[in-house]
Length: 303
Image (cartoon, rainbow, N blue to C red; front, side, top):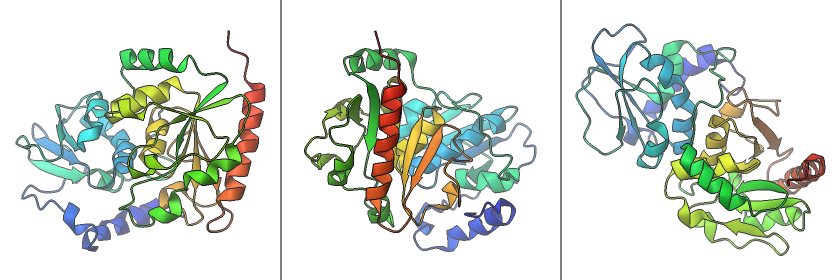
């Protein structure tokens, strides 16, 4: 899958259900798995199985499936306000709430196998998610006070995830971006990582207490010029919204970011800044600083 050999990769990916770490996500439904065929008037349950970012990435397949089929979508509760806007779905249910009757099911990350998705046929339409216009307008008014390029930052992922220590960047390492003229940084960081203090010279606006769900985070992202994030859910969110996003990517990158490329087959608006050797965030952030300086200089002055 890292090499883009999806025909074989999606089939082999079904072995994940034999892994001890994935078994808790195995639902054990008595209803059969969907094979991609016509279902008539039967109800198909599509359900999230892994992290928030995985759900944001793979929900792109749902509208096309729901066109002409009866589909119920089960997702993590924080994503409910955002994903209820996906077209064609009969109902969106939060994980843990009672499910309505259904006849067939499929985990979201099995959809590419069922649909025969290749590297060339990944749905690339962006945005495929949208924030509520009223929320966006409110955030645009709030960030309107900020000067220069308005850049959201996310530096840490979920600490319970295997390998999080390699993908997350201690906030103190962002000293490379300190005292950067023409840029206003906005924190998008939630969770334990939000308690880290920025290094001297890195001023950051923090409205995260008002980000109660991903719908609110999406609205703030819509009001920003750019998002810079490690490999976590917010990077997927920005890409799904079609907003410019720079991914700070570790050396041993996840399969979805592919080898030998700085763009993404999943998100046209995403650019990768990759470690050239394990643990080397210094050169990554120096490259980011150079690009931010160029962007801020090229940006027209706001009235």
